[in-house]
Image 1: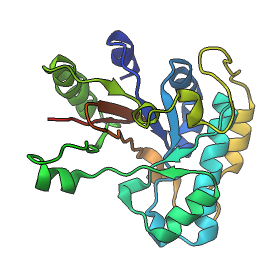
Image 2 (image 1 turned 90 degrees about the horizontal axis):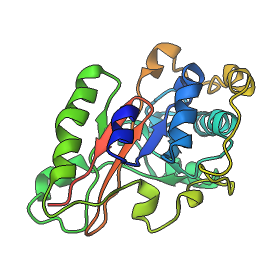
Image 3 (image 1 turned 45 degrees about the vertical axis):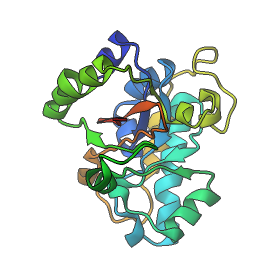
Length: 231
């Protein structure tokens, strides 16, 4: 996926599952250094509304920590697995400094002919079949569309610079972090305490793109991909 994105000079948003970042820290660092936006997708991909407040804090907090350890920056955006979110979950995330992003597939299906403010579409690329679909059909069609789409990361669709996606002022191009032992050490301690989610459930990740009028955005997660289209 990242090879294709580089080939077409497409910048995206990666929503990262923290437990997967431990397994693939170099990939996460490559995504960050390529100036893609990095965001949070929890530690173990649970249904967030079923968790206690302490568990929510662990899911989000440990994910942010491993991302910071690997990339040197702390994300300010996150996406709830399955789009499962309520006011309590949003409040906990907000208290941690995280802004919520959610896909809107059902709204798209019901209003595809009338939407003029943009919409969000989600796809996963955990499996090769979905990677092939994204890179072989969805993204090439979007790039070839006339009139031409403008594809951007989530943060740029909000008319904000990439640096505003993080708590720190690090710039992907000018302040590359070092990939060291801290990523594994801190991640091994980050078990998202008490979530009840096993490592076997960590293979999922999600991504989301936000689109505003006259823009089409694409975002990818660690093992997930997404495109959003403006008709």
